[in-house]
Image (cartoon, rainbow, N blue to C red; front, side, top):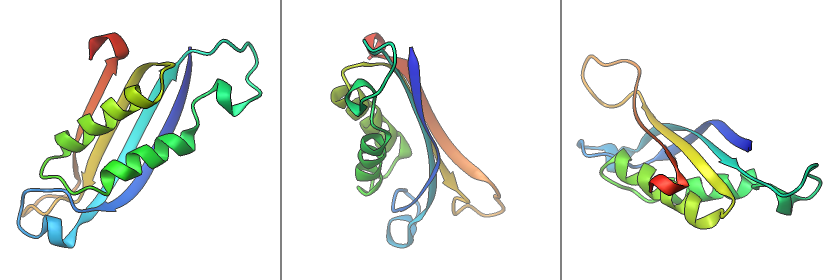
Length: 120
């Protein structure tokens, strides 16, 4: 089993319920990995693996669509991963909202999901 990973991807996006979040937007950090199988003993062609640029574009497409909840965004990303990559066995996605607009709050708030294909 191989695993492709995308780490610390930063997006400016307009997700949220609180006043101003959809208008002003915020910074979000996304981490994801996908474990997959291949029939190749030595991978020499892109077709024998999962193209991380396609994974990035899939995530970017969903991050560009404003939603009230990060849970909505993350589940849409997750299902698109399994719909797009037939060799994917398990996936993990985490979205963190950096410095959410809450009084006296410093840090990030996030959601994550990790499931195997047969669990969805």
